[in-house]
Image (cartoon, rainbow, N blue to C red; front, side, top):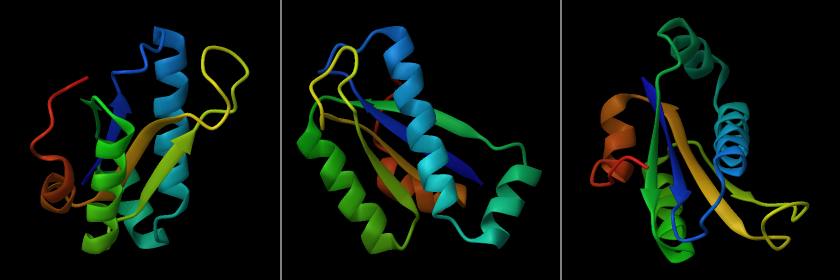
Length: 112
């Protein structure tokens, strides 16, 4: 079991902003996951990986793929209080789900 969080490199987010967006994505996708899967993921250590892409378009492609695979996912839009314009798409979380399911969507991406 794992969760992949994909963040946009092209935005140049500061470390704190990046951490906040990754946390928002992780929690949002977790909340959309079934109780049994949440329990299994929590019991197995809540494995996460943070990956990067270089465009909003690529995030939406991955979200579409997660949707097709039936994997929980969440797209995060920034509120615009600090570094970014309101509504800027910053991150995508895929899972938690089995490693192989998550890898079907994010397996070709590199670490952030």
